[in-house]
Amino acid sequence: NAGVTQTPKFQVLKTGQSMTLQCAQDMNHNSMYWYRQDPGMGLRLIYYSASEGTTDKGEVPNGYNVSRLNKREFSLRLESAAPSQTSVYFCASSEEGARGNTIYFGEGSWLTVV
Amino acid sequence: AQTVTQSQPEMSVQEAETVTLSCTYDTSESDYYLFWYKQPPSRQMILVIRQEAYKQQNATENRFSVNFQKAAKSFSLKISDSQLGDAAMYFCAYNVYQLIWGAGTKLIIKP
Image 1 (cartoon, rainbow over the protein chains, first blue to last red):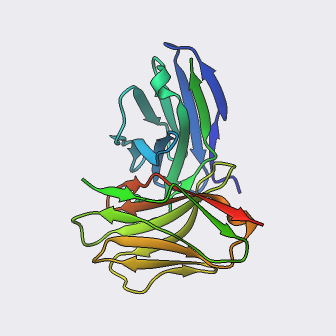
Image 2 (image 1 turned 45 degrees about the vertical axis):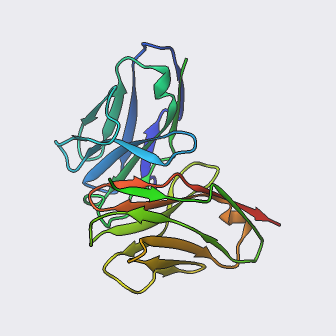
C-alpha cells in the first residue's frame, strides 16, 4: 500500500540549477498538494491541484512551477534554485479538497541548495 | 488573517503519564475543521485526530482526545498513557479552504 510516493528523497543543488520533484499517489484522490517545511515552522502550501487539469497558487508559490500530469501525478519544478529554497518538501493528496478531508503525506524530499 | 498558534515549542512527559498540548487559532469563520498531525523522526505526517467545528462533542481516538473550546478558539490535544512511540513533533492545523499550520510542539517521552 504505497500511498503517496515522492522522489528524490535527498538532493543537493547548486544555485541556479533546475530540478523537478516527482509525486504520485495510488489512492485515486482528486486533490494534490506541495508543501515546504522550514525549521521551526509549520508546513506552508506552495501549490495545489484541486483536480486533474487545474493548479492554483498557495501561500509561497514564487520560484516554483507545478504540473498535474494526470490524476496520479503532480510534479514540482524549481527553475533556478536559490539557497532560500533549501527545505523539506512534502507532497500530499486528499479525496476532494482539503476541507474536512484527511490529507495523506509522502515521506518528504530533503533539498539543499548551495 | 487566519493563524494557528502552538505556544509550547517543547513538552516532556514521563512514560505512562498524561500530557496536554495546546493550540489556539484565529478565524472569523463558523464552519471549519481542526486537525492534529504527528511527525515522527521519519518525517512523514500522520493524522492523529480531527474535529469538526459544528460538532460540540470532543473527538477521541484511543489514547488521544481533544478539548475543543470554540468560543475560546482553543483546540488542545490530550495524550493519555504516553508511550515511547508517541515521541514526535505534533502540529495543529486549521482548515476552511486550505490547511493553516501551527509551528509545532516537540513531545519528549521520558522512560
